[in-house]
Amino acid sequence: MSYFDFRVVVPTHERRELVTRLVRGLLDQTVARDCYEIVVVCDGCADGTADALRSSHGGDLTVIEQPQRGPGAARDRGAAGASARTILFLDDDMRPARDLLERHDDAQRRIGGGLVLGALPLDPGSPRSFLTVGLARWAERRDERLRRDGERIRFDDVLTGNLSIERGTLERLGGFDPAFFGASVFGDEDLDLGFRALAAGVPVVYAAEARAWQTFDKSFRALARDIRSGAAADARFAAKHPEASPVLTLGRVAAFPSWERRALRFAAARPRLATPAVAFSIAALDWAARRGATGARLEHAHAVARAAIYGLGLADAGAAAYAAAESTA
Image 1: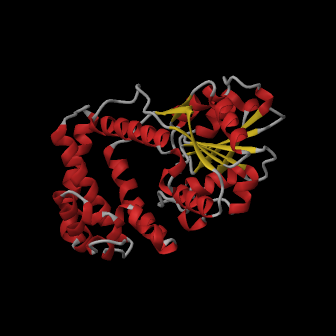
Image 2: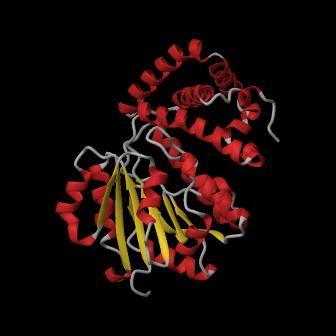
């Protein structure tokens, strides 16, 4: 590897302990330290993240502070001006394998530069609850499918929690779309990048050996905010890429199990009536998750609540018509 072959970019918001742990892991890689640089972008942090990183690792990384504009804007800011051949994006709650950079480099060399998706297994140290049980299953299914169907990667497989991209490719694609930026905006900036990359013929591969474990410690209240905002992001995505709608949640409502479909459609069509029941569900599920509860009934209640929260997000975006449609195909 040549000097600064990688720039590692980490957007973070109010997660001082997790991002500090991530930086420690990045400073203990199998590749030579002068082969990569680390840039952490503090996106509206008020918890002392920037000071903590500078005091503990000041000479080993660059810390950028900005008003909160969302992770897409933070990633663009962190990648700006890079001379490295490859940009590696990591979420702040990841725990990297010691050979993470080496494995991304191997995959980038195999494809001659492009976009490499790394594995996203759940960190076993994550607090156990019905949330982490479900997330672990999702990560395992994703890994199995991408190992099996690597030639059929879809845009919604492109997740920036653990993703490397050739710098020139990122520049040609224009980085992340500002339409998905904002302090209250969550989701789809990475899917949009993936959609544009695939449409442009950029090589996109899955490298199962490039592992970073996600430590999921988010409360259900915080997750509910993300789901609601993510529905609005899906509506923006569908307006920009109508042909992609059938792959998004809003394009698959008709295929949902009965209770989930009904909850989503009712919340989207009658948000004022649905809001009190959704608020009660969020409080109850947040309580259960904090106590580490698991079980099939909770997972069912979680699925129905997620659907209703998503429906409220569609209503927020003025996109309730998606919920009523039998199909967007």
